[in-house]
Image 1 (cartoon, rainbow, N blue to C red):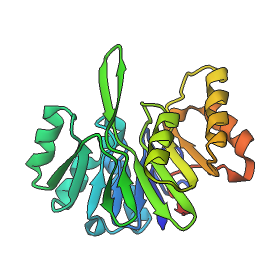
Image 2: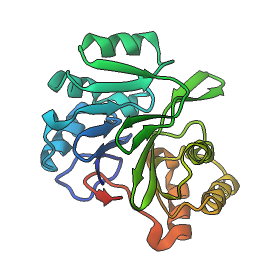
Image 3: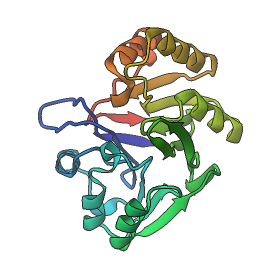
Image 4: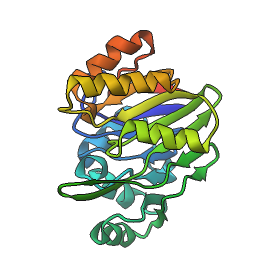
Amino acid sequence: MKIKVLFENKRINNALSFGWGVSFLIEDSTLFDTGEDAGCLLHNMSVMGVERNGIKTVIISHEHFDHTGGLWEVLRNNPRVDLYICRDSSRGFKDKAHSYGCNVIEVGASFSPIADSIYTTGQMEMLHGFGRIVEQSLVLDTPKGLTILTGCAHQGIINIVKRVKENIKKDIYLVMGGFHLLDEPVRKIWEVNSRLKESGIQKVGPSHCTGEEAIETFRESYGDNFIDIKAGKVIEV
């Protein structure tokens, strides 16, 4: 199963655009998040030879700008997609999604299949001083083991891994995406790193909101099993 990194805050070469947020394309047909900017996303699709009309399914982890920036242009180009969003997303976000005529599927709290060998964790929530964030992550079941794709992991990457392990009794090969450790103290970063290793995670690919200090910690700890996530990279799982 191939994962193409369409959007990240780093790039493999200057032909590609970059920005804040993530976007991963699985097997050229399933899109997970859309980064912060439609122009950058569509440019990278073109450079990487991605056929826009080949996208059949779009999953949005949560409605923050750095994960939905390219969504509306994707839907404008291909309004027949199945769009998976969290059930407790805002009314404004839901209404705008429905206005494009796509098949909007609201994901509740249950871990559930999206397609063959692809699952959503179901929406998970986090409460903070500014309100409530709901977010889902994606799970790919491959011959190498499970791959978990996260948007920002606001609910905590360890909690996401725990939910996956509770629902699929298989080893986890890779955890990739935002780990939301930006500005966290070094002690917390090393604690998360240790707990991921204790959980048997073979490889990690932390991106944008993980923060540079945390990314370098994972790079040091995982060595050859660290994956440097950049726009333009293709990862086989």
